[in-house]
Length: 257
Image 1: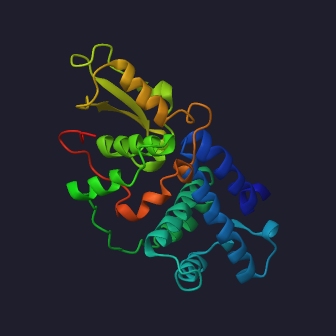
Image 2: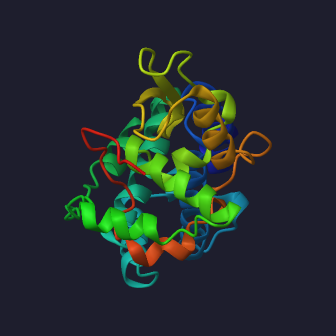
């Protein structure tokens, strides 16, 4: 009965069993939920004047959760979207506890009655042809690093993938056409929440054979087969001023380099 009352065992099961084994959420989502509880638990402990290891589930009351969300916005300067993200993690924890402990269903209902705030979403930004020209012209094609950056920018543009998705692409994910002009090339992309999907790589005007195509992609992703780089590891920081969108939609035809 003690394990059902105390908050600690529920948090452990939620983070290590529910998120990973049962729902198989991505690492980013797991860290986001963990960070939410890292902020919430000390906040509740201060307000209730209890030790962290002595907190009961019911101490995380709906009133304290509302104060916590207000604290995020006013004291920590979090945006409404971040506030809603933290609340979603708390809702998920409440659902998990109520599912395995009927005694806490009423507590879960109170927590889940806390609504999400409406926030405006910035419209998607697509780059125009002149902006793409300026972005690609920023790379120095006389150096190996510049050619690598140029090819990576072309890959992002032609496929419409996010930077973190492109960072996870391995050379083995590229399936190049055996007969250029007849066969199609495609690449496997690992998206959010462990989802994978394939994107067709349409032939570029300057590609005349499979060797040139493979050489170009090996140059762009030579390091990724050893260790998938993180988003900052892509190394496109110097080109940040040349464009203003984190994701661009692919055009009907690939850009001729």
